[in-house]
Image 1 (spheres, rainbow, N blue to C red):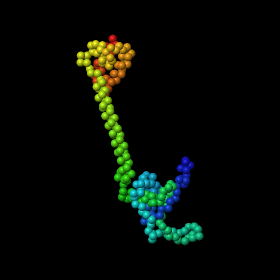
Image 2: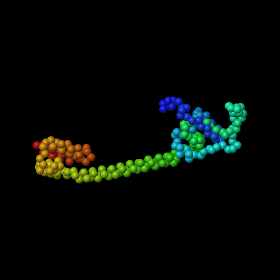
Image 3: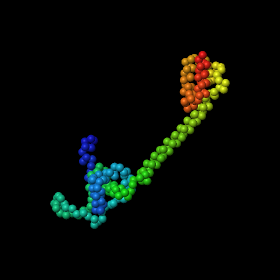
Image 4: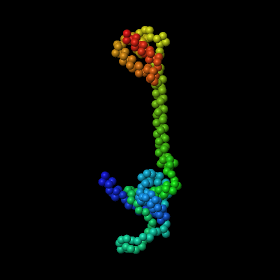
Length: 228
């Protein structure tokens, strides 16, 4: 593959694009002004603009019957004789293109060079791509809204499960166990209490989403009471 890329001739095919003499002259003039050849001009369109967009532009078509160019035969038995043939352009491009598509691409190059058209979001392929992105964004937005609703529901449900701070404060072991979310008859050891405290502190801490100062203060007081 690397050798093929180094030897461009392997990847190129010579195309003869028959066209009107007027179109031929305009294309040659454009290529000269851009300091490139006809193949480069066609390639600049074919590799950038999708084929279905190129095909929406007019094909300049074949030359009229009386539109011919004169040339001299350079080889064979008829060498040196004048010959009348269809006007044409020569281009070296990758294999696989058809002449009409190349001619349309060259015509589009002319149109763009004259500022007669701009490839915009209004072109069909661009509209399709824009619609695809819009649909994708809508799907993402719907999924986000559903997730947001679930999170809001869970947040409300979780808020209902939080203990209500005791107005009178902590005076009994049962008060402290209530704050720690433990049954009134429970007798946890110190290691269990510390583990429980760490878990609840991440929830009740004022810097957290659900915590506040009142909850954290009573959690600290409950831990102190039960640690004695």
